[in-house]
Image (cartoon, rainbow, N blue to C red):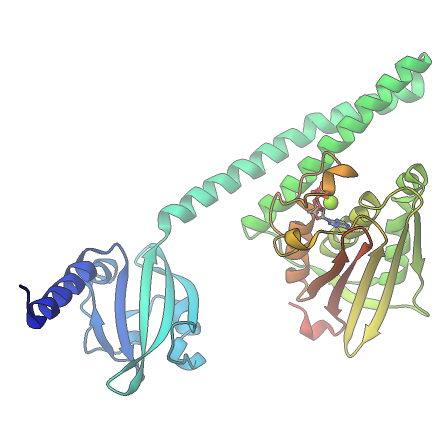
Length: 353
Ligand SMILES: Nc1ncnc2c1ncn2[C@@H]1O[C@H](COP(=O)(O)OP(=O)(O)OP(=O)(O)O)[C@@H](O)[C@H]1O
Ligand SMILES: [Mg+2]
């Protein structure tokens, strides 16, 4: 029969083995920043024994950790209070999660370090490939489009021939759209999607952009209206990012609205924010699909009924563009009744990045 003492020793041994073999670096830091414990793996990451020293002396080349210092941010004890950060240490990329805990009646921080260098390298290689492939695809596509335009204008076709030509044309348009989306994604993921703010007059900008949608609205018989804001509305903003937001949201509103439906776009200025509202009375987003809808390649279960060939990338780009502009995005939607997307952007340039 094992007694109580044996069981305690077993548990301690188990903890020791676990901490010595786990592929994560682990330490415990007291409320004054003194390192109380570190495991073998952490020693191999830092190459320095840290116990008894202040953490900022040891982790000083990890700027991110110091900026995001959980001690400064006031981590509270408890499992749920986990702060995550990423940084470089000794040529490695490390992800750290900090959890508040109690030690000898005082607050301490449990830090778990994982080496994500490999994952980051793979991600970078993937982004490079995506960027190169989309750039390479763009040139022949532009050539095909140009040739098709010339063929259509300069040559004579039978009625059936023109139908085939239109078909090829719309396929090329779709390919072109997809390549543009992939290029934007590769820019986002490689961190090259940067804001270059310039002063734009929103009312004029929106009116001009919406003319692009006129042909598709007419074809689908969807009425698209813009409730003009009284007067000019100027914003120092990145034009490309704002264009992505507007085009994707308005495009979706038209795409997911049935023939005879309505899309209404409006602007409002409120408490230092400009709010862009895009409302439609289309098919809506089912409740069960709403929480993940901004994810990459995500489409709602009813999307194919009106648009069988969407990519599920537009909203992901919109979300990243809104983030870049320091704004917020949210929506209300009911299946079968319609959707409203709201984007709020700070109207003061100093609030923007
Ligand atoms: N206004 C809307 N009404 C109904 N569903 C919408 C609306 N806007 C977005 N959705 C849903 O969100 C999904 C994601 O939209 P997103 O624009 O990212 O992709 P997509 O339209 O499918 O394809 P693409 O990347 O070519 O734009 C859509 O597939 C659709 O299910
Ligand atoms: Mg879309």
